[in-house]
Image 1 (cartoon, rainbow, N blue to C red):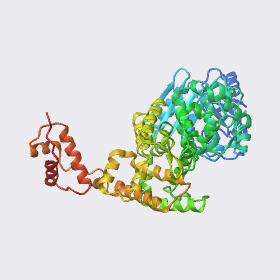
Image 2 (spheres, helix red, strand yellow):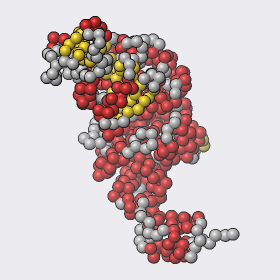
Image 3 (cartoon, rainbow, N blue to C red):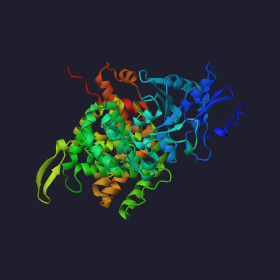
Length: 559
């Protein structure tokens, strides 16, 4: 506490109004403290301060709050931290998204905070008096909004869930200062997600998706009446803004158990409204070695993918809790990926336009990788099995359909392009494995030429696809061949990138035209691409050998 202030310990748990260092009003609420202060000093400007109760349990809060406390102490109105940050503080988690509410002038406060932190601020909604401060380096945002209603109680009642409807004076640090009008702490301890009132989901259908996301991000369960409400709300999802639906879908996929989250969306009727093309895979059967219909297989791929991801994480536990076959398979994956784990992890941190990182793009690829099978299924007689189900061209059909879906959800062109490449190319590593499992330098070059930045993600997706198909490694020969393919692709991409994946040009178009006495045209581009491929294959290594190859391969244009 600042030395120029009087001892406020007598006012623990209450609000005080100050003129300079003098206490002029005290109350159980900020309004009561201000009313007393205005009665005695009607012409003065006051600041408000909440006196925290040290007897409470300390909360796990963002360090930013300590930095902002001096600024909040200068405010003439109360500032409250609300929503998920309060919930996470009670769960012992530091939240990177901080929501604040004030009676008025929220945008003004947002810009004052931005100035104090020396970062940008933005107006989100001038009519609703909402502003945002972003700290890009810390991946943190701070939102400031005016009360949704006349006071804090009205604001909390308008929120979605009991566990998200708690507040804390922004300068407080202990559980004794919590404001919990809807028994959020009780539901938090019970691990239940419950709406504040019966119209909560009807007022905003996106809350149904948020409820499912919190179930899987927190390891909670829906309260019984909440599950009924979510089912009833599903048909209203189409009334919500596409961007909000997209954001909830992406957050669902980012949970630790995306396969369970997507399964719950299907069970509760939400997937039928959100992604009917994925739900349509439920009844699409497959021939051996597949052991599940396509939708169940998709969920299995997501499950195995999270385990493959864990194999490249520090101190991973990818094999824990698995049966012996699965544990052995994941150990093999870890052995293959371990030399490249740090670089793969770095790739996952790279964001494309729209803020999606590599890991989230990979999970989108897994979700959509077989979406084309509903449109390409054929059933043919087979002597051994009686009938054989095939899906010729499902990869490209699926890529086209994926592009349409992602554009409908307003993903950026860059994000959609990466996911489309994953869907279109998800069979490539499996095909390379079937060809022997030891791709040549030329094959590696062509693979990355076609898949670009998605190539490593496709290799990891192929591992998950194989493991889901067999519910484990399956027959040893194809499994070992696939591991060899993935190892080879990683080796060339990370260790020999400029040699095999993207060799620097030996010759440019102008020089090639001069040496071969050619005119500009598409033939020059074809020859340069041919030279680059031969260079990656180790067949040319100088200007002279490049020119010789071009001379031999040159095809005069026919008029």
